[in-house]
Length: 483
Image 1 (cartoon, rainbow, N blue to C red):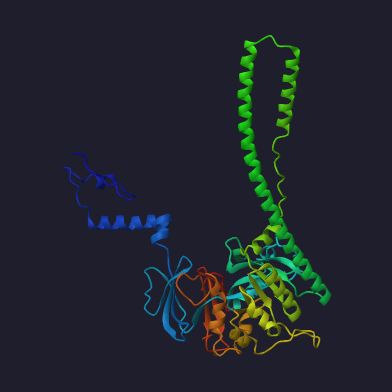
Image 2 (tube, rainbow, N blue to C red):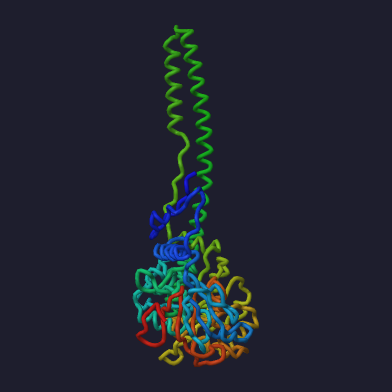
């Protein structure tokens, strides 16, 4: 019987030939240890699927405090991240073997903030088409503005396209994480909403903008009717083709029968031949007059996006601050049964009854900059939020600008609420999607604060982690991607 031999790197053939009598002899203890060490070196030296599954190094944030939605704080907790996601958190979370441990004792950890109304890096970008996406104009290499935004605790934004008025483009959702190829910004969706601006220009220009938007939606409705007519005509055309094919087969059978009769009766006068030629010409003319294929409508990408809006597949975000513009927005929503977000809505208290009657409508409030001209800005009610809550109208808060002012805006508007802490409102911003809300398993964005943001109005971020990478840290000059 041949011996089963063990071959490994670093093991000589002489060692392998120590087997005898058909039985595998035990290896010396020192050699066994050597084999185990070499195996580990081979695995670690050649990364692959096994390494990704079993040897992926975890990152542990030790000694952090975690505020909760009930107001309690989990003190001296551990947050364990693997593959950029939180896999475990809490005081009882034990650090895995061979993990990278970072002591952040005394810092408070929350999820990243989401700005639902941001124009980050879009200062000089203008658009006036539904085809345009705000992501197209995002400057991922404008690190100065992006890092300032990260320094305020904002890790995710809804990017609002900017334009001269009317239909200006689509809202995009993105994370401000760093990219492997350089720069910042990881796209999540280019179709959050279709942005319509009814706020720009003089009163006369705003009225014309409203009529223009209404006309575009009407044209989209007419296009849908045209497409429906084309679809029905195409179905009829296919049925006629089938009937024509059947009729053609029947005519071929008749022609074969006639040819057989002609062979039997070869003596026919010329009159009958002329009649036959005439019949054949009639048949040919009928073939030429067969079913005609309907003309397909030309493709219109902008109208197709508006059809998505009319079919409730894509909501609209309408920017309107004054009561007259809000009334125009309400008229559009009622006429076309739109799912809408009203952005700005400073004078919403003047049309509160009309807003309460609408379905599928929410408000996105901002803290606008004070106007330099007296009486030029919209009229605002300091009790607007309480009135919205009383009417059951949902609302959220956005910066309306470069996102650096989001936390201050939330703190300012939270003063109108009964709650003393702005943090629940800030974290509720992103709870509408899969990335926001309170810190939990599966989250990829963590903000470490100096002080408890639920209690301390002067609390400020110390570090921002996205997908397991430190994208910003307060001490200037710290190398990105490391603690």
